Image (cartoon, rainbow, N blue to C red; front, side):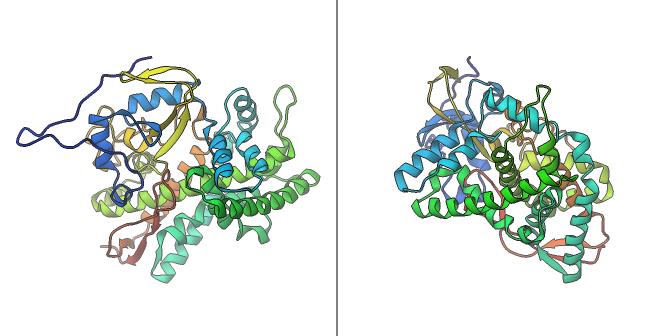
Length: 424
């Protein structure tokens, strides 16, 4: 398979050639604004090897890899084991099984089996029934912000909403609801095992055991007294051949519902709110035309993708842009770069909620397309709709955006202080 042609270093007609662009996701400048680097990478080094992996930035190339099932999604469990062996003596056997049984990291035939069961519950009609619950939770959070005259839109709203929604859908006991948020934040570091030190593995293993023990009790209780909640529905799920989830698979799936959905939905809402407030004409347009809500969410996903990067492992030799990728090579797919590719999106650095941004890759593509995409999208629609439907308006407090630095793959804000002012 061959895609595209190589491009060289560009030169400024008025001066010397620029030095080759470097992909350095650890730099402060990249964390603050990765998009100028993405642009140069697409133009000058769209497929190149650095930091021990291939970095791919063009939409067509990223989409092709995502669609190709011969690229394995099972890299993260391998990296967890390798990193644990290097820096820690903690037994990560059960954590390794979490990776092996998670839809995010499985290949066929395991992926098809698990997806077949989950798809019986995560249906469009099922998600649609959650909208009134989501609206009630969002309205409660908004009322609190309005009463206080402002809020930290991340901790008080964008971060609180998806945790409360998932707790409500699972009907978790009250004593667990305040604990799953911190547990989720700690466990999500397993998605980036290369950043973990020995102490991190010790802490995450302890938190993971606590989370597993808590959900073990919930699963046991729902098996004896099923209800109308998510866990009960997953327990009841059967394939045509009678296959069903084991208890451990149910617990792992419950944990991954939080881990895979919380940070990214938080970032989606936070990044979208920042874009709407930094582009007040777009916020005003959404206020006038609420029918643009769905398109506005797509544009946020394209313009400032919550999940900026995802990894794959090559299982066969493939040629991309004239480069030979060999079996065993790691591949980093820069979703954030692909979503600003001018070959697909006109004026890609302009935030425009009226554009058709449906070709974005923020939720992945193909077999491993995000299972929670419908739920994340609905929460963002409800959030933006609730915040921009009121006569009062949100206003950013002074200062540069405070981007989080605990993750390389998720782009999201640590804090976003806003105040409430009377509408004009």
